[in-house]
Image (cartoon, rainbow, N blue to C red; front, side, top):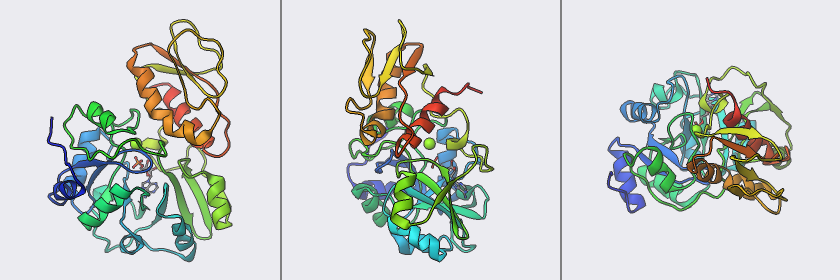
Length: 310
Ligand code: AMP
Ligand code: MG
């Protein structure tokens, strides 16, 4: 077991020295590294077992830092008024941005966000450099929403700054700014409707097989050990992940939100999948979730968790 950082300052010292350190954000725990340090960024890919062609989201302390990394068009600046928050913007990279090439997987665009979490913001300010931080879990597995799950996933080999459970519970929404258009590449914790309302700009949805190869976009991802089945009625021997009113079932059950609240469901999603998975049942039946608002992100994660494993 590695020594845990007990404060933001201790975590910042690790990161500034080129070490990895996991930290909380409002979405899920991130596996952080100095995004300007190629060796540190490579350690993220190695630790997660993540394919190198998958670029990382770069976390910034503030807009000034973000503007050193990418070109912000007027529309991008408008979208950035939703920061800090669970919205990642894919923008043209500035050639002189100092980021390690591996962090951007050699692309000429860069994915950036400012997280809405006091510890994450304090850490970014203390490090004073952008941090690459994908979810702090082995590639392809469930994302962690607690420090405990990070320790479990990496067998205690990665230091974790503990900030309690994450509030949003699913990863950020990823939007690419394409000229005068916004295109959602990944549904996430900021509902598409909310972005549209706040900005007064429609957000298109990228085709499912859109070009960017990336973990969150692979068909099978977020996979628990158990298989997942989307169905209203669980069978004997299965575990059940319910939503809203629950049918009679004697087996192990968790309810994402008894009252049918999608925010609560998103917050509980990965934690409850972890809990049910730990029971060792071969199959988890999952109740259907409405596809509006945050339901879009929840259903996206469930479909990928249920997809045939390659
Ligand atoms: P995460 O694993 O949560 O850090 O998310 C990383 C995701 O960001 C990847 O799966 C990609 O979908 C997306 N991403 C990062 N950089 C880019 C980029 N330059 N262009 C398009 N998508 C990107
Ligand atoms: Mg991830």
